[in-house]
Image 1 (cartoon, helix red, strand yellow):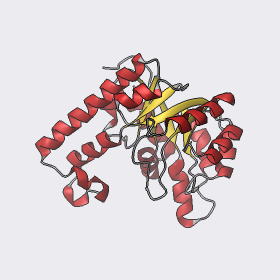
Image 2 (spheres, one colour):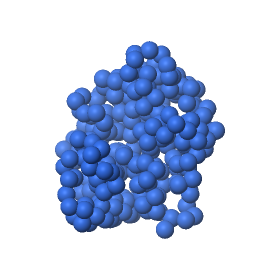
Image 3 (spheres, one colour):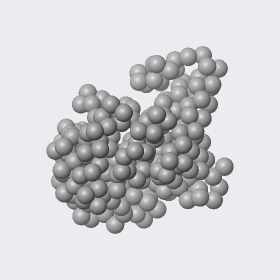
Length: 265
């Protein structure tokens, strides 16, 4: 059990921009979340500047970088044009993620093995601008092995599979989202899959730690499933967005963040 170590919380505020873009107006403004996040005890701000600018745009990123009292973790693809923008913005950290234009959200980790040379070039460019670098990857030891050969500081383990299996075990079938269909199995099988998924995250987290990398985790984590990830004591940071912003609709953003922070103790 991780009862003493402090686990950092990065609050991803992309979904505030998603709500704004639903009506293509200027409200709500993600910038307004910065002081609330700090007051509520968040440890960093996380945003994703996508190639298609579907939510956070360049102006958002500039304003957030200029005004945030918290470190900014800027997620981005390895596209050279995007990397140049990130270098100009100079966030505390750049987290390199895969991108597909057709996906609703990031569906998997970065394929480090297949794109090693492109990633190496992006990492070198970011490090030359004194930007810490993390890779958003699937929990796989072979990917950790490849990642450890790069000049990176951190890996963030993709917890989406764990979160999806958890949702299938705890969501009424009548309300199950179409993205969870692949996990429609007998309950006993799902229970074993959940345990195996959690064990894989734990094993890979320790492997990355042994390789000298800082370890973070994120994707699909919420108020119901986060505690098992919290208890992996080599994971030092979680980046959580959608569930916090969703709860804030009913409780307000400050309380939503405080509620999550309480779970991470």
